[in-house]
Image (cartoon, one colour):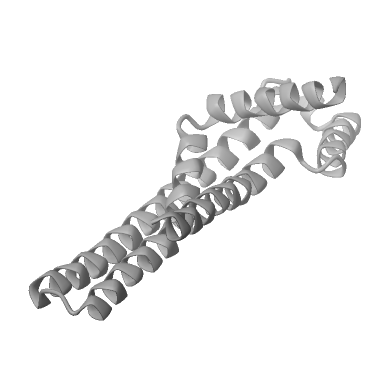
Length: 168
């Protein structure tokens, strides 16, 4: 249990680093994952409503309105998803820039003869090697977080849709 708490603390610390280097980046990742997971379920739900209306042979105007809502909702969700994709790509670029600047800040503040020193370059290479060897913690969080959240939202939407199918 203490290992789990230590891992959660490490993830929280990593998220605070990401937040300090690129504000709102994690929120954009979460929103992107939400809309990506939501997209197919809106269409499945609306298709089910349209099929129900066709099978009940009700008002054609209501059926046309459901089709229009379905197409409009799909279009809007697609646009919002692409908007979040673009915003995440911009934030990811800014984060990578800030992260590299943060890593190179010490080198930039050194005297010229220290910057050109072989030991300085070896220590910097060692820091980068260690960061990559342990999974590049900050980068791995940014890479894994959207798919983890998207999968969680997909499970929640699937269960809620299945629950609704069998209870109504």
